[in-house]
Structures are given as structure tokens and as C-alpha cells.
Length: 475
Ligand SMILES: Nc1ncnc2c1ncn2[C@@H]1O[C@H](COP(=O)(O)OP(=O)(O)O)[C@@H](O)[C@H]1O
Ligand SMILES: O=C(CO)[C@@H](O)[C@H](O)COP(=O)(O)O
Image (tube, rainbow, N blue to C red; front, side, top):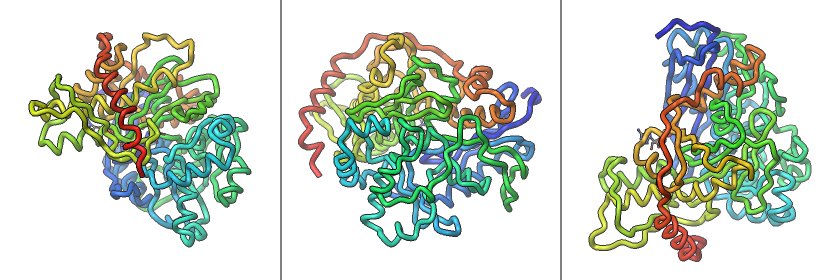
């Protein structure tokens, strides 16, 4: 490996399943060292934020001596999670994560009470899904009032980690746009919704401006980072990946991880009244229309495990259809749904059921692809495929077959952490983060031509979804 040319920066991805850290040469984008430590997620989708901090320290330690020379760091984190802290800055209870659907009744009431879906889309950019922080806060108030009353600060996962580094309560517009209490129309916390859910704005972090620093690393026992290193604002993991790709408007991204996401950068503020597209802000000054599924790689891995199959052991053919909504679903909006399997015959093979699970997971994402792209987007622009699933052949081939579009798989695998590193480098060098990522050529990777779209499978999935509607909505 060539000796690094520039100063070193650290990018962190604190996602649902693990924390990943990269030490990156700010001049070239070369990854000098990496570390990863797992998280525990309970069956009701909660995680202890203290554990994220310990995982961050462990991932940084694994990076070895390089991390001691880092001049700047930034944290990208799973979006939406409700982190509640007491007066000492300790978690009041485990964080409620983005894929917990218990707040569906609270969500329905909040949408209704604040003027319905159209009013939400216009004011906040999004009709909240049960993932959104505001619905979780309302759930906490109704179900654990004593815990809610003892809360002295409310944070998102990346805010919590950034604050542990700097001692300052900060966030950024990208992650703030997934709370449901930050208005994309005004660029500020919305006093009306905060009053409605009994949350004082004093409990919320300051939203940093584009390019503003969160602070510097303070002296902390056991943290292998130099005191005084710059800390960039950080952002939500999808916003970080968009930065990491140096994404320009019109390029669709499909991310296959714990969540499935499909998104694009846009210069137009999104406001989808159907709620399919969340109108997030990006980590710069643009927008990130995005649709997200709760069931992606873990659903496929679960089905493979049930049959004792390798995740690549798919078989074509058969008329079986799987709607893999094991955790309820957000896209389509079916929080009470469970997984369904139809079309089973005597000759159906386990490999066909596995392939049908991939098909079901990809179908939900592709249904939103055109909706996240601006009307003038190039219809044949390749889909950028990222996330852990992008390493898999079965995932890639399913996306090609069901989209009918060319697909490009960036060689760089940790795009969230790389985007956070680009944000840290941008702060250090006084550049734009997306320009830094473009200089690093992070989206380079093999391109796969378009194949004919498998209309038959898509039609079967559409028909199964509409046919099973009553079943999927049953509480
Ligand atoms: N070689 C591979 N082929 C297909 N899928 C993979 C491969 N390696 C990891 N995965 C999938 O990637 C998922 C993790 O993706 P990742 O993007 O790291 O998750 P997160 O959303 O938590 O950041 C795992 O659930 C696993 O199913
Ligand atoms: O809820 C969303 C997006 O709105 C998810 O994409 C989360 O941000 C979780 O991300 P991963 O852990 O799957 O990366």
C-alpha cells in the first residue's frame, strides 16, 4: 500500500447491525485502516446507545496506529432512532430504532391531527412513517410516561455519538429531516408539532449549518483519537452514502442493507402526499427523496437459514411469490403485515422460494424508483448498487432482472463511512464534501448492462400485493 499523501481523516458508519470505521487519506481517498464491531438489537428493535459508543471505540482501536494521527472525524448513523438522555447524559432507556413499528397508532393519530398527509408533506417534506422519531417519542409518552418525564435531552444515533466526542449537542439538517419535528419548508424545528407532542425545543440539539464543525474531540479515557481533532457535523447513514458517492441529481441509488433504500439527490424540495417518498434534506444544501423498506437483507438471510441454504443458492422458475414483510413494512405502508408466501406447489423447491424472497424485497424498492427521481432524470442512468447486499450475485441479478436498467456496483464497499470521511476531509481542507468524494472516484466499479425486464414476476407480485391487502392490514 502506498504511503498516505495527505492528512488522515476518520469516517464512521454506526448502522443497525454494527459500527464500521475507516481511516482515509484525505488527499487520495485511499483507505489506510478499517475496523468493525457488532451491535446487539433486541427482538423488539431496541439498542443500547452506550453499546454504540463501545463499538465505536473498538472499531477505532482495530484501525491501529493510523487512527492516532487522524486530524478530523465524522459520524454517519442509522436514521430516526429515538435516543433519550437523563441530566447526566446517560440513556434513560434503550433507543427505539427505525424498524420498530410499535408507534403505528401514534403515527396515524399525529397525521390526522396535524391536517392529514398533504399538510405533513408540505410542512415537513414527509408524511411520517412509523420509523420517524416523532412517532416514537409519542409512543414513549403514552406507554412509558415516567421515562418520558425524566428525559433531559433527545438525540438521534449520530447526534449521540458526535456529542460523546465533542461534549456539544448538535445535529445536521439531513438527519433532522427524518425526525418529523424539523420542517423542510422553514429549515427549523417546528414549534407547532413540538408543542403537540410535549417536547421542549431546549431538549433538542442545535442544527449545524452546511460545512459547520460540531466541535473538537475532547479528552476521553479509552478513546484512541487525538484530543483536539476536528469533528464534522455527521449525518444520517443514507445522506452520508450520498456524500460518499459524490452523488449528482438523476443518479438513482439502491442500498441493500438491514434496510433497503432507494434514493437520488434533487435540487427540488420533495413533498409526496402519498407518503411513499420521504422528503429528506441531504447533508449539503440539496434534498434526498428516499423510499425505505424494513425487510431487505435480513429477510433473505432468514429464509435461506430456514431452508439451510447458502444465500446464493437461488433457483429460477415456479410460480411462488413471497412478500417478505417479516418486520411489518414501511414501503408499502403496512406496519401490521407479516410475511406471506403464495403459489406453493408439490414441485416448488427451497431455492425457488429463496429467489422469490429476493424478488419480493427488490420489488418493493423498485416500485419507488421512479418516484425518487426528478421528472427530467435520464431513464437509462445505471442504478448504483451499494450496501452489504451489493456484494451478492443473487441480489445484483435480481435488481437487473426486475429493473431492466443497467447496474453499477462501486468497488468502494463502505460508502456510509467513506461519505463521513469525505465530510471530515471537507471540513479539514475547506472543500465541498461531494467534490472530495468525486476526487476520490468512489463510485468507480464494474458496470452491468440492462437485461430485459421480467414483467411476469412483477405482475405476479403486484397482483399478490393487492389480493392480500385485507390480510396485510389486519392488526
Ligand atoms: N457477500 C455477501 N453477499 C450478499 N449479502 C451480503 C454479503 N455480505 C453481507 N451481506 C448482507 O449485508 C447485510 C449487511 O449490510 P450492511 O449494509 O452492512 O448493513 P447495515 O444496513 O446494518 O449497515 C447483511 O445482513 C448480509 O445479509
Ligand atoms: O430508516 C431508514 C431510512 O429512512 C434506514 O435506512 C435507517 O437509516 C437504517 O439504516 P441501515 O442500518 O440499514 O443502514
